[in-house]
Every structure is written in structure tokens, then in C-alpha cells.
Length: 219
Image (cartoon, rainbow, N blue to C red; front, side, top):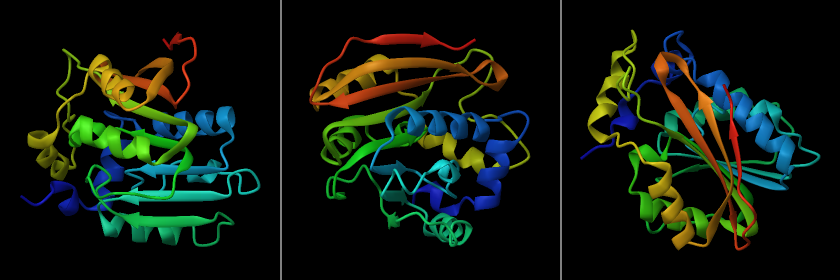
């Protein structure tokens, strides 16, 4: 079956994510900026990078390698054009990161926002773990269930509704167990409020070293 992400125009995706009813583009932008400031990685991979939301926060003097990964080649073309004058050392990879054959030279930080809902959890986490150096960090943003709104909020961009049949929310507990089975220990978690009564869980996982867990709730 063809992945519906391949048929969603980029304008629809960005319009949906930026619409007043969803307003997730800025939330994820701010999360990525905070993660970069906290970890100052020499290398980073963004899973489901789309048009490069948040890449303007990359400091090329700190982060020497940036890998953008997306299944939709049209999104990658837009990203490349948007950042054509950037000083970033940017690598763009057209791939399904959950594939058993997926691999990139390991990085210090993997940022993955709202992508694990569309892939097999265990296999995806396994490939992500392989993509991290020892002590590398995975930051994963997961959508939490909401009694007030369906997983895909209805907007004027109806093409996004084709994602509903393949979207499966992943509980933080399930995801954390999958991470632990692949050498990724939860070291920090955040709860981030969204529109329509929704919330995001943002889990920070370190490869190969356990640290005390810090819980942060943002109200």
C-alpha cells in the first residue's frame, strides 16, 4: 500500500500544522530550539524533517553535521531550497527511517516529532538506536490521547485526513519500554499542552547510560 504521506502536498501539511486549530508548528519549533540549546550537538538527525521547521536554530559553528530524513522527496526539495544559503553542512536522505535496512552514520542527537505514530514502534526504535553514538540523545515527541479531539484535527486541509487509517498513538510507557530494550534510557520527560485539549509527551532518551529521571509539566 502506498504511504499516504507521499500524496500530501507540502502546502497542505504546513498549512494544517500552522492552522489556529492545530498550532503545532511553532510548538515543535520551540522544542527543537530548546533541545539544541541544551545539548549543543556536533551532529543531529531530524526524522520526518519535512520543510525544515526549526533548522534556522542550527548554529553551524556548533553543529557540524545536520541530517534531514523524510519519506517524501518533494518535502526534501523544499527544505533544500529554503536553506540553500545556509552555512549548515546539510545532508538530505529520502528514506523510511523505520525500515530494517535504514542506516546513517551515527549522530549525537536524533530529533523525532510526531513520527512514531506512523511506524512500527519496535523496529523504528531499533534503527534509531543504531543511528546514535554512545551517550547520544533521542528526543521523541508523541501525541497523547485526547477525549476532546480526534488524533487528526479537522482543518480546511482535508488531505491530512488520509493519515487517520495509519495513525496509531503510542503510549509513553510502551515507547519507553521499546527504548529500554534497545539501550535507550529515559532521562527527562515533558508534557506540552496543545490546542483542542491535546498534549505532547516529549521523552529524552540517552544511549548507553542511565541518569535520574526529571519530570517537567508545562501548563
